[in-house]
Length: 322
Image (tube, rainbow, N blue to C red; front, side):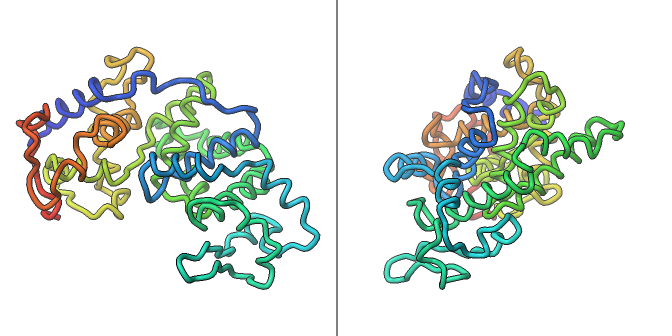
């Protein structure tokens, strides 16, 4: 594996497996904090399992909405002091309980009248996420997330180096969203990238920042290991450290700088790390191209799928190599 082969391989994946209409208007109605909450809570809930499983659970058990939370909170005669504002809620601690374990929280005396457990979400962390996001939008964003995001951008308005400015804005936005319970680097990058790119195409700097965000999940990390990309960059690492300096995030950023995505679709920006990362994810994911994943490859051995178009280019390293 060398850089020339890496760029050719990833470019072909972008052309053949990338989403053809990646840039499109967001399906958010109404275009208010309520609508944005309802969109964000779905995107942020894709954590720990496949998107298909998360979608199926939501279809069977229902989804949580901004209106539901508002009604439940307004109806409270007595309320836990953790339900007063965003900072107070940070130590909620609610868990659903499994098998013989009972649900728990950090104020069990009030749990019977608490609205947090009343939503049948996949796990207690998602209940906490929903209320934390609700309070974040209400208290930290003063009910207007658009103004809040603009204020994060304005902190770096005097930065003359555009690339550095984009990185600084990214870091600020991610650090803010990671304050929400159970939101990590991957999910915040994923949600913010799509939101910034597609909310309003007239906000050019929003589009540039969103286009530069990269969401690293296990599929993308394992792909970069199996193909030999991490080995080439001398950056073998565990999945939990993908956002550390020099690891998956930085490597994909560097690769994307050498791929002109405008040649793939004239509507796309030339530098489009989010699209590059998303194309790799689609190449691997079961619900899309379903090629490079642990369902089809024994992780203890090199890939043996000779029908894969990357077979003669890829290093085919087993994951046990880590």
